[in-house]
Image (tube, rainbow, N blue to C red; front, top):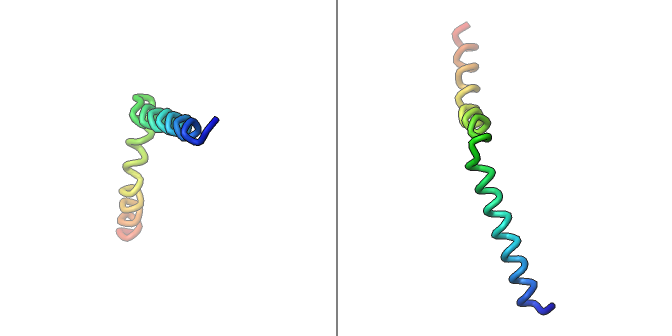
Length: 54
């Protein structure tokens, strides 16, 4: 195997990994987890404001 073949294999493996991450990120099973994670910055704010009211 020469260097060009190894680079080609590396490119294909990288493309497969990228497509796998895209498929995982956009799968409907992960939507709930990502929606919950998107709300995390706001959870701290509401706890802080509730503590200040006391």
